Length: 217
Image (cartoon, rainbow, N blue to C red; front, side, top):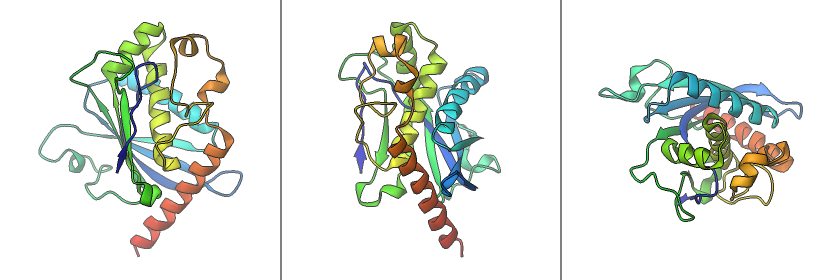
C-alpha cells in the first residue's frame, strides 16, 4: 500500500466514501460516481456544498457525474447509522475523509492530504483523506476562496483513486505542485483532468462496477 503525499505549495486532499452507478458517457463507459462523505472536521454544510459544486464541475469535464452521500461521524458505528452508509464496502465504492491535522503548519515537506493505492490491484483503491485546516491555511496564503481549493483538492485525490496511481502529471489538475501564483492567477486548463486521465477514470469505474456486480451474484 502506497501513500501519496503533497507538499505545502500543492493542494491537499480530503476524504469521502463514494459509490458508482450505471450511467454511460459518450464513449460508452461508466460516467456516474456516488460519494459517501465522512466530515470529521466539521466543515459547515454551506462550505461543503460549495466545495462539492467545484468537484462536480471538474468531473463533468471528464464525463463523470458525481452524487453525494453524507455519513455520520459519531456514535457507536458511524457507517451503520444512516441507511446510505454501509459497513461493507463494495468494489464500486470509495471513501473520502474530511479531517483536521494535529499539525496545521505549512512548509515544503508538509502533506496536505493523501490517497492510498495498492499498485498490485489499482482498481481496489478506495480511501482518500484531506486536512481542511491545511487547505484553509494554504487558501489564506494564496488569498483564494477556501471552498474552491477544497473542491480542487477533493477532485485531485479522487482522481488518484480512480486512475489507480499516486503518480502525478506535468500539467492539469493531477500535477504535484500548485504554487501560490497558479492558485491565484492560474488558467482554467490547470484545474481539469487531462483527456487520458479522464478516459482512465471512466475505464476504472466500469471495471469496478463489473467486479461489484459479479461479487453480488
